[in-house]
Every structure is written in C-alpha cells, then in structure tokens.
Image (cartoon, rainbow, N blue to C red; front, side):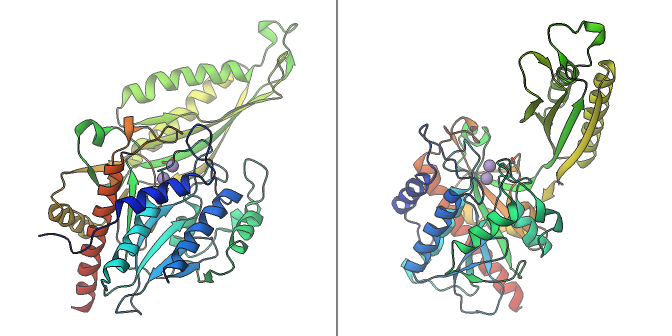
Length: 421
Ligand code: GLV
Ligand code: MN
Ligand code: MN
C-alpha cells in the first residue's frame, strides 16, 4: 500500500533554513530562548505562513501557538501535531524546529493534495520547552495539561532577570492577530516528531524511532555555604571552603552514579561561585543537578545519594548544604493504540523502525496526561544535541516528515472511527 499524499522535502528544508536564521549564531546554531524577541519572531513567521495558507491561528494564555486545518467533523476535538520553537542558548537548528515545521509541512501537504480529514488537525508550537531561560522546561504543555498556569510562575524570573509574566504578555501581544482560546481544551491525540538527541538510530542505521516512553527527570539546586575569607592568609584548619566541599562531593557522584548504572544520567550544568573573587575563599557555591532514569524508585535513590554525599562533604569542610528540588518530571509510557498506528504507518512506508525510550524530556510527556500521545524520532549526527553543531541529514528530516504525515493520517482515522462506533 502506498500513501496518497507526500510531504514536500524541499519546502521543509527551506523552512528549516529560514527558521534557523532567527536567532542564528555564528557557529551555525540558534539562540532563540523562550519568550525572547527571537522566539517571538519565529512565532510570527509561523503564524504568517499559516495565515498565507488560509489556516486559523490561535494562542492560549501560555502563548502555546496553534494552527488549525478544519476537518469534516468540525466539532470533534482536534488531533494535534507539533513540538517547540524555543532553543537552548547555544542550541541546534533541529531540536524542536524539526517537529514544529514538519507538522506544518503535514498540514500544507494535505492542503496541496486537497485531502479532507474527518478530524480537525492542528499544529502546535509549545512555549518554553527548553527551560533554559525560564525554568522549568515544558512550561507550555505542563500548563496545558493542568488547564491552568501555576500560581508560582507569577513572580518567576529568568536567568537574565526578566519577569516571566511580563515576557509572556509581551509574547502574546506580539501576535495580536491570533485568536485567544482557553488553556487545556480537549484534543483527541498528539504526535511529536523530534531528533533522537542520542546516537542509537544513527549507529544502527535505522531511520525512524518509535518512542514508547520517556525517562524521568529531576532537577535539584544545591547551595553549599561556608565562609568567605582571605585566600592568602587563611590556613587550612580555618577554612570553611564550599568549593572544596562541592568538588569532593561531585568527584564521588561522577565516579559512582553513571559508572554504576548505564541507564542513569547525572549532569551538573550550572555552577556559580560567590562572591567570585580570585583572592577570596568563596562564601557559597550554587550548583544544579539534572538526574534522569526510567525507574522512579531509582531517581529517588539517586536524589538521596546526591543529598547525603553533599551533606557529608559539606560537613567535612565546615559548611552547610541546602537542597531545592525545582523540577520533577516522572517517566511516562505512551499510548499503545497510537504506537500501533505508528507501526502501521512505518509498515506502509516500508521503513525500518526501532522501538525506544526517550532520554530527553518532551512536551509529549505532559500532553500524554490528557490525551493519547506518542513520538517519532529521527537520527542526528553523532547523537549530538543542545549544541550548535547539531545536524540532521536532509534525507532523514524528509523521512521523518513523511512518517509524521502517514502516522497522523493513520491515527486520525483510527480515532475518528473509534469515536463514531
Ligand atoms: C529537554 O530539552 C531535555 O533536557 O531533556
Ligand atoms: Mn526539544
Ligand atoms: Mn532541547
């Protein structure tokens, strides 16, 4: 069996180039952090492209952006496909953009072919998936799944000191032509195409990953406080050095957590030293830990290990350690019915697939709480992501978009017929 519609690879690749210029960095990556001017510009461009094709454009109070292609059954909840347009500070051009622009390519291709669907189909660009300017990540899909913006975000500030609420309002105002709609309206299902951000598809020469779940993530902020003192005059016995404590603790954690469990991930991505003077023992160090594992009980055990190791090292150096858990994303298992649709779509396209779990978190994880969700992965070079050198072969991007189209049609038919039977 062949598919009745095909995506336009040239158009998709051109769009990827066009969007990569928004916030493009000299090293070939992008800096398009959430709710920034660059993020707003990319949303505007997508909205313009959508309106040029006659699609309606919506945003909700979290600035999640939706583009709607009508279906025959206009009052049914839409099927939704998409990803995010925001990036890491030194991000790649495909993380998020590939899924969002491929989703747009899907609705354009359906339009080109004049193929009507029963269910309405919507493209989404979720707000702040990355969590690098404003933490946590996946704020847009999290609020969508909760049906409300958490109150705690009202006085949230970004790393640059910007107030989240003000930047959110500025982003919403930058798209006045988008119709407003409430958070968390009903949807019938969600599919997200994304780069793998890991090496396995490329290594195994498999073009498509069918993602059946996402491992859990937990973020901690650890503040180790000692006593600021003179670097030249303070003898060892008088030092309460939080840097020495942090280094001792991290040495143990780096040497034990990942070497001890190949499924565990332990990352220290931020490390701030106060007051940050060359000739002063620091008064405090503040660091972040990103822990990941597919098993919730193992994440609990890893957090306990991080806490006890830091406490012990702090104590040994006359310091104190205080912990704040500021992001928690439990692991998720995607909808088997949708995964079956992906399997059928891949068979139709004769594409070899690998069933896999995602090491990165994604908006699909939160959407999965309110509707059947699943993900499709394509390979990226050397598995490298969150890096300006991130690269996807054009043929792999094109195959991913075609797989997204086939899967979307398969899923929409299955959902529409299940709902009417
Ligand atoms: C998403 O960007 C993640 O850090 O997993
Ligand atoms: Mn992403
Ligand atoms: Mn990312």
